[in-house]
Image (cartoon, rainbow, N blue to C red):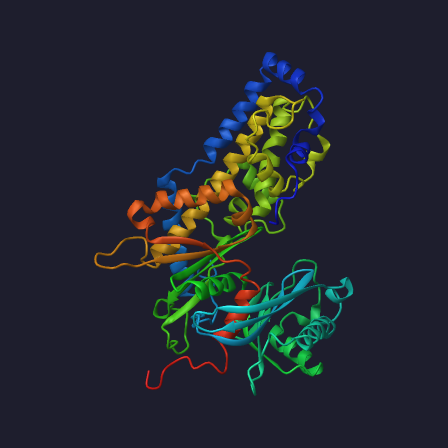
Length: 491
């Protein structure tokens, strides 16, 4: 979810434009005919079904913990994939040198370089360039796509400049964020399962995307090692850890939603390799696919799911993430229009279009606190009802996402204060929903504090970790560097 750029007047226009001129008359008619009562009944019934009392949130968290254990025990054992990221060493802040990142996850991709100054100096310099991918490269051949990406990367490297200093005699290293479904088999390899987001390149499916990129870089004469294949949630965790050693988990609340956390390696039964020396492994939960009978789902959620591209999947994501919140509001408004003539007898044609009411528009409506809610020629009660509807949907989403964070903290044993310990726990957060939807973000934080209690809440910090898919990938390249002395002799 991007920055909210739609003005409040325009935001309300989506939902109430058809009724603007005659809204006051309609409101009077609705009162006389009982239609207003019917509209409020629909709203009240929806609110009750969306209820998230603390007991229910604790049930959701406990159900998620059960699924976390099952997902760690075996592949396919749970709706939560609990993917092993192969990241067993997160950045410490001691990393030094020049590192690159490539973030490929849609119709644009970014290349970045970051100069790290080591302890107490942090990120000394950074630069990035964003490039559009021509449609022909999205549906052509694997070589054509990766050659295009490698050519851009080579050109970017050639423009390093004097402020970026590669270490003498060392090969440049890259973190590769690839936001498509892959199965990883190591920190720097992953097989593409399928393309999404408009890509359709048959000969890449089933191939190791790291190997495909490496071959393209070799064809371009670019001497660079791909040190890490990165999921954006894992990148967010890495970026958070670099700035704060207390960061042990990350959550993205944006168009979609996901979480990652640091797990004890011996608590992963499906891990069959040698235990990492660190004793830890970052787990990419893919928590959007969580589902439970305790989730407060309504008929609108069931209809949205049935009509989606992936029915029966990503149920949790469909009630908490930015892609779907505005669509839920639209569906409720449609019913209010159809059954209670909320907009004056007919449903505004624009409102019938799925996903026409985006979450940025919803947040603009939600945050409008002016006395007349800006639109002076519409019924104030009508506009207040729409604001209340936005509040119901956002509150449910924010409180359920807080329950997910509680599950992670409980799984890690960080939901209590241990006597004699001064343990601090930080969670790195990113995503447009978290960053730009103020009411959602505040509700999320308040709910987490409510779930944890005052004493534990003092030990938990929520930190914004911006650009995990970019900076985080470069930092993981640094923490996975072939030149890094990870352990002292004899350790």
